[in-house]
Image 1 (cartoon, rainbow over the protein chains, first blue to last red):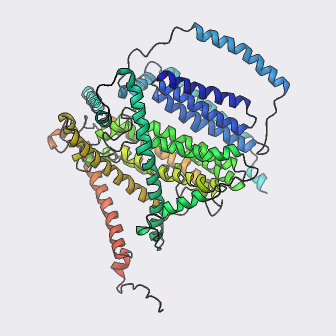
Image 2: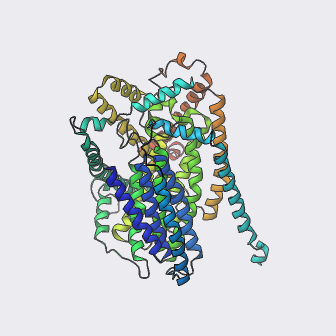
Length: 172
Length: 457
């Protein structure tokens, strides 16, 4: 059953990612991206990683995807804007993909065989263990990530502020 | 103390055996069939119980909203179709199904058609994670309960934004933009106020939270500390905003934007947005009940006590009765909150979008931070009574609280205050409803207000 579900989710991810690449309307691309993210969340669920699935939904769907759509709405020249990739873009993408695909296949093949999780933690304990790991052994990377996000936020606020004219000059 | 606390929580966790699966699953199933059978059972439960229940609830809520708004505005509301107009929503549904399914010219047809489903399905999926009773849960081992509901609900916004975008209409896109701003910003105070409750409970699992609140009204999480009481109020405000309910219904403010993001929709797709909104109302109310207001437990702790006892005795019939009673209590609490949401909607005016965002970032967010710190401090400095009520101790016994008097004092005082406030509100509503005019008039106006006499034929 798990195998069948895996095939289902993998098919969803593959098809929707193809849609992301091949669709020419940027908002439709976002919808395909939504389907891909949902499929990845399904894969996490298959791996008994409920929390990861939920966080995936909150951050990528609830945050990133909405911001993408929001940005598109604010910046798109007209609603029916269609992207027309040039030949140079095709060659560039083909080159990157041609290098990355064999590298990733090689990396996956060189991994040790997949293992079942060694010890199923009792349900209530998984979250507790995760939290203790975050503030214990992995406190430094965790805090570093937080600091990086803070830096990004301040930078974004600074950029947004710097481009703004003085309010008096605009209103008079 | 901490070790026994943890241990008792694990026991409460393992007590969440699925009564339904125990009753329904036949015994001698070959092992290869088990996952298929449980999959079939879950699908059956979704199709036979959850979908009809959600649909019926949405219909009844729409009817109730019209009745409540009618009474608040001194009207009668729907009263022609069926008893008290109960069948009005069904009649409206038939009318909507019969309507033409329009798609505006210049719209993105695919997205326009998909968007209502993207908005509706997440709301329905999060419906599955709500614990209606100790064993009336779709998946008792969903250890991320609260986060799961938040995560799935965050998908709904995408549907609304897509609807606004694909309609190719100014009103729709304004509605969608407002929705995006509002949802993204109000998710933060919403999450923080939930974190206060989760921190106090020490678990994300809604079922375990329910068991922890099973020892009477003073063990409900609202009364655990001043911070959780404040978090309850903040959650209520933020949930109104995140569910686009008035006074935060800017995405569809009908006085400015026609109907906001669903301006261009008609027929069944239009009604899907309504279903999403009304089921969403119930879900945010149910999360509030499950985290803060004692989940399925009655104020006297009877359900918690009998559930523990029957589980220990293996009394399946008793468990069934307790679960049904628990479901009734849960629904009553959630419906009361839904009523309050409607009441707020028809009482308060709508702010502007900049006022809404100002309130989120400059009022509610700092307040949520303060509440979070106060809650953490309370947990550090006021020792709570550890353990699960009815498992480790009898919560009504004074001796069991030795060394935790401050905790008990706060709980009892705040519970008494809340009960009095609730009784006052209920009494006011009841008296004014029975008297068919406000209490103030009854108290201060000497002459009774006469009904307008019927016109002479």
